[in-house]
Length: 233
Ligand code: C5P
Image (cartoon, rainbow, N blue to C red; front, side, top):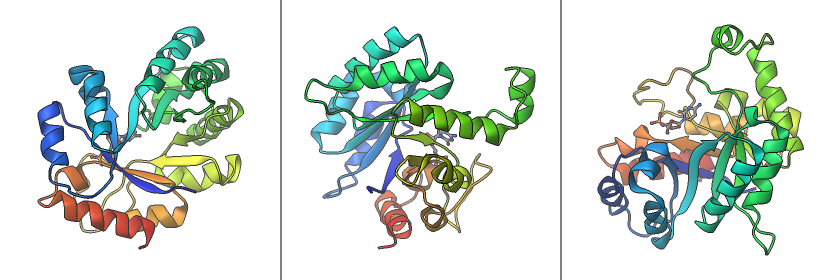
């Protein structure tokens, strides 16, 4: 199964992204583009990154009625992204529609993963604001099961949940995990973190790493360190 380090490109403009990419020479990177960059620069930023031969996880977390999500997904598939995502809270029907929209006429499609509960949502807020009474780990696993039922490829989750997701949904079901820090690095605002080698041991398939690479004095060296620790090479 493919395992990789995905760099969270949390920049606000094309210039910053290009500056960052220009530091690398031969490397073919996997980059996560989120809402801020996509809404600021539009589809052109995706084309620019793809032109340089990199892969893209387009992190827009779609959540709407099935028909709208299906149509939006076919637009994203035409952008030739490699991975995108939806909120599992949109229901199994919405996730199935997303898959239909993403699938091209030749049957190929980008990977599709689901957000279960955002890690910023506590059990208390889930209960008070969303009226969901079940323990949060049960909800996360149930949403992961729904994503699998709908035919999705995996979920975004904390590295701490990756092992359990594999136990419940199978080893082939992908776990994409942010919250990764070097053992000697700054935690920033992340609370529950793991090192790249711990994430590998626990079975993460893709780690999403932002500031430990983008904010490093030498981003290229930090990226290579991360790949080496995660892939054990
Ligand atoms: O800079 P850092 O490594 O903390 O970046 C992590 C990336 O993963 C950010 O783009 C952040 O929005 C995203 N993310 C996260 N936790 C989640 C879901 C996404 O940190 N639960």
